[in-house]
Image (cartoon, helix red, strand yellow):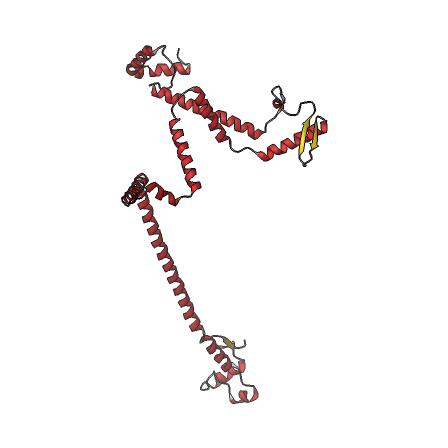
Length: 317
């Protein structure tokens, strides 16, 4: 069995194979170091490259230490930056939480009242100073506004005063008028583009049917002339009954009717609650009988609750 090959380790940590001749020589001459070649081998063979490999490995290990140090410094810098961001975020959250707690602790009604009192006090102080100087306060205050703004303000105040005086009930005609105006305000602006489009379509249809003539005047204006009086509406016209509204208009009308019904029901409940009626079943024929039934209910309702519930369910025998 041939002897096993021995391996020697260089500085770079790599193992190299040792030839059998060197193993035999090292066994015969134990005083000769195993690392260095013999004289005959050095004469016969070219110089081996292990020293160059060792120098390369040494040169490769030298820049590794600075790179590791720089990486550690980079990690430390990123860690400190993250710590600074976390601290800044924590401080900002604390400030926002403090502001929110202060806002919640402050009563908005009291703040509004204080602002109103401050405005009134400033107005009175300015008025006193102007009158003490012998000037017209209203005239001086009007210098801060234009004529258009002043007129709009006066119109708004007159409208506000008229609305305040018109809130009380006068008669049913006035209530109907107010309701009609309110419905007109809620209706929104008319669709003029759609109206113009439908008008032109109706004119073209009537002109094609021969019941309408389009005449151009001397100044270039176009005039529609109704031949038999069927195009333009009169007091006896019934063409409006043939109009079919859009689905959106029908839905809007249904919503308005439902809203009016809910408002009427709400007013009825408020009126009945004001009169002492809870809105239940009517079990009386006059006011005196109503008071008597209320007295009975006050004393005996707790005993007859089960019987009345059975009657309502229809399970009473």
